Amino acid sequence: MYTTCSSCPNRSACFDELSINELTKVTEHKSEITYKKGETIIKQNSAAKHIYFVKSGLVKVHIENEDKNLILEVSGKSSMLGVTALNHSKKYNFSVTAIETVEVCEINIDIISNIMTNNVAFSLSIINELNTSIDKLLSKVFYLSHKNIQSRMAELLLNFSDKIFESKTFILPISRTELAELTNMAKENVVRTLKDFESKGYIKSKGRQVEIIDYKSLSEISQ
Image (cartoon, rainbow, N blue to C red; front, side, top):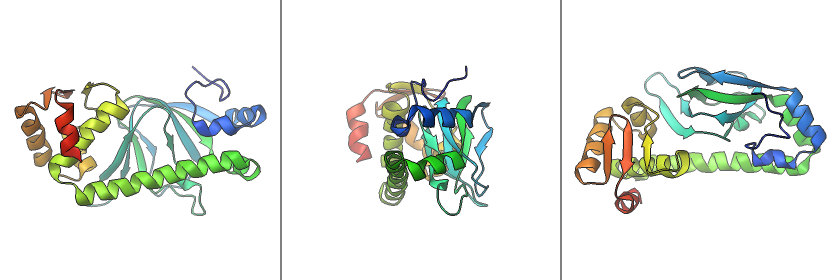
């Protein structure tokens, strides 16, 4: 169902800084697109023409190279993607792929840039989004360089529970191989760690379904 930016209940907080006329302008220059699982939404190093807003579904933000992919994060509803392309290079420095059916709003990047020029509050809000993206990247660097295998997996499970699904029982949205790419671990270590957590009573699992049993212990391990 097509939604105007002014009536969207899940719009980014950035858009609260826009006037009705500006919201109308954004609505006139956006498209609502549905992507199926596995389809590419953003391709790394391609020319940045749009900002994307996730209405529903989950995506993976990842960096591609010849040897190994690195998943930076799994993002869901109300996420803004491509904001980092609002710089002089106007290129995407990562790829985004749907990991389930995803609905996104595709907004012309030039419209966003033009509004930022004339709306200081909106511009500052977008800068905050950029800062949040940088903070996430720095946290990822710390996470990969300072945490051991068990700590990484514990933090990942808690992130799915607290931030993505808001439930202690959830279906892992990505494969074991993708879990390895998200934690910079070997797939064998992912499987071994999940089995170890289950044997110690921290979690229960059946296929991709995971239930967190001992939240406190996982939290302590993740530190």
